[in-house]
Amino acid sequence: MRVIAGEYRHRILAEVPGTTTRPTTDKNRESLFNILGQFFDGGECLDLFAGSGAIGIEALSRGFFKAVFVDQAVPAIQTIHGNLAKLNVPASMFQVLRDEALHAISRFQAGQFAFIYLDPSYASGLIPTCLERIEASAILAETGTVCAETDKSTVLPDLVGHFTKVDERLTGNTKFTFYEWRKQS
Image (cartoon, rainbow, N blue to C red; front, side, top):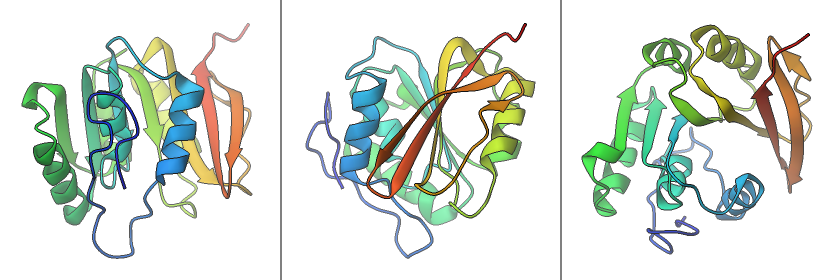
């Protein structure tokens, strides 16, 4: 697994040991960031269910000024810290939290994140609940985007509160579903 583009391009990232974490492949991360835009000018990224931290690290590499990584598994937290240290990412550019994702959402400030990435276990069914909590906590910036990764057969709702599904993309067996906050009339 490697960083695809930006400041840390081609650098190798460690994966979480064992079989409990499913990493987002290099090809799928490249597809995701091709959809989002190649590079960014600031903003904060929230990588929930972070695993190795590859999504947040890719966001930092491409211009986000800060990434927050949340995972409840100790091996994942250790892997994230190891990957950030190996890349010499300045401590001011990241925060790593060992916490359950739904609980962690309430810890952040309103409007804090320009991009939120949700990648729970495919079978968990947590994505709509995460969207409800994100809306209740108002942590997504007004022009921000939430992306949920699922397997290709998962059907997510078009509306969750004020979140509207704005796009879906298949890459192999993976589906990325994009939500934005919309005022409903």
